[in-house]
Image (cartoon, rainbow, N blue to C red):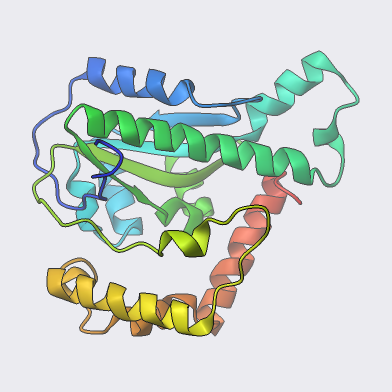
Length: 247
């Protein structure tokens, strides 16, 4: 099925995707479950802007895709909507954890609907988190107003690769009935071992990250608490707070 065979695609052909197809994908995204629809989507077509984004994204190979959709959390429009409904609304409070989680979830469900619709139309896709890591830079590049928070670039196009299905945690580690099931260390280590073997067979990390390391080493680098990650995390936190995203 479409969902069972979904894989992230990072190498695309330059075959254009018609505007009508992109509009169908956006419509599919909007059919996702929602309350506030607190997202806005900006398609990036300007070549100068694309060049600037490539620099910020370190020439990510996935940016070979013909369609780039910048997915933003839109607190600006949501605030205006809330103000029209009720002047004493929760977004005027210092913290609004329920609404924050709901709005982020809505954006994620919008993105997933677009991804599945793309797959159903024979297109590939991948989500890139470069905007989340540098929201200030992306906001400046696009001239985004306060309250519009860039989070992801969704790249869509005709695949130029046919990768295998990538490993996932065993079902029993993510699904249980009636009560939470604690994962055992040996189960997690066994998953890492099996996932590493599968990704090495594909040449995944060498192909996409130009790294000759195993999965555990790669994840260790990715989650390490360093001065650089502290700097980036602090900058993102300041931007989110300034934009009104608080928990």
